[in-house]
Length: 145
Length: 153
Picture 1 (tube, each protein chain N blue to C red):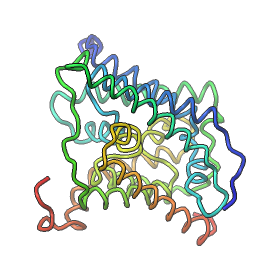
Picture 2 (picture 1 turned 90 degrees about the vertical axis):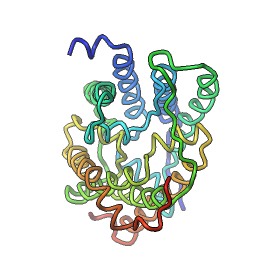
Picture 3 (picture 1 turned 120 degrees about the vertical axis):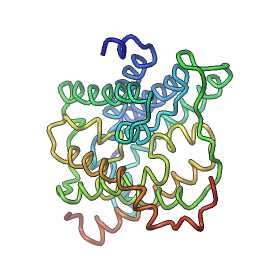
Picture 4 (picture 1 turned 45 degrees about the vertical axis):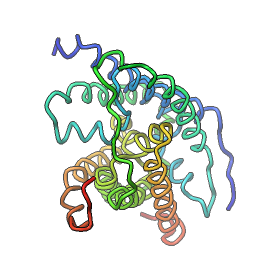
């Protein structure tokens, strides 16, 4: 393993903002900030729980739009994954987060933050699966996908 | 529409979603190359995203302890916390499938949604795929995890 040049301050600042936002959602609304769960609630709506979810996802999308204008390099895609690959990746992510009850935010930030063993197990497993997949794509298949 | 905007719960959700999205963009999570570099343990490893996880989880861990001392949230009647405590098959199988997709595309749900107007096609395709996956998940789960082995959870 080689370690490449990496940044500390932007990831840390971004992480702190994510943590503060997630804590604010618990403090004000009593909800776990799990993006996959919030988004699922828009696709498979439950009565009375649609508006706040739509507002949350809308806020995220708006933030993306603002940041693209302010700092487009934050959205540079150097991975070079193909369109079909990305579509399949999305499909797997969608299936996985629903069966596994959460993703990097709900299990990662909130779950580990709440010291949930279930979430710690989930994070350990999805990290391992992600590392395994990148080994296959980038080393076995040479990153051409 | 006006009523939606009058609700403090909805307005705070908008603000929180906005800050969350800004955080994702600043952190580097909206760059699939960085995410894949972070997962590239056996190659040229980019550890940056450890600090995203560390910063986010650390802040949440501290504040959560203070927040749950309140009797109820500010704008709603109760804290809605997950009740399941068991590490069961769906949790593990789901995490495996999610992790494979995360490594394949370099997107998890938040960054994918935050990037839809970035001008790149991939985030749009990712969100379409993810939506289809979320809708198809119960069928897939029925195939992967026979109901018989699943105790009530």
